[in-house]
Amino acid sequence: MRITTADKILVAALLILNGWLFASWGTGFSKGDWVVVTVNQKETIRLSLDQDQTTHVKGPLGLTEVEIKNGQARIVRSPCNNKVCIKSGYIRYADRLAAYIPNRVVVRIVGKSHRGVDAVVG
Image (cartoon, rainbow, N blue to C red; front, side, top):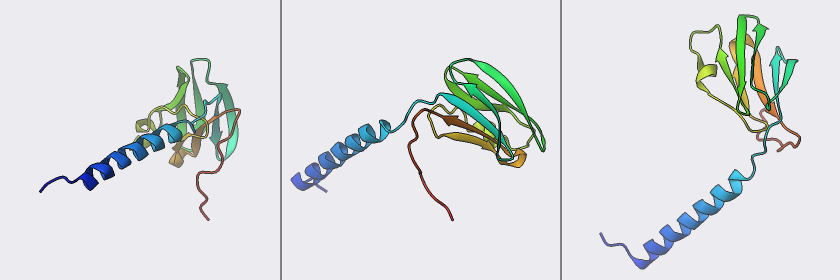
């Protein structure tokens, strides 16, 4: 099978489109300023992303440990078996979250600017 001129043009156009999408999509992330931890949909604590610290919040199943380090936040310990919330890793951009649903704990990054709605489920 031979590569034709049309194939080369298509590949080049797709590479250019991919580069443009990557560049424009990446600029949509805004820096987060605070970590907001909610339990049962109620804000329990708001911490600055500028200061490295660790905190514990109590949910229905027990304590969840949240770590803030180098402008990022993550769930470090939780009283569950699967540890999916821990495996999700660090979050650092505004409007991103890590959730420990069985314990009803949500760790969310907020910033001065809001990116808008990603999706609506009804």
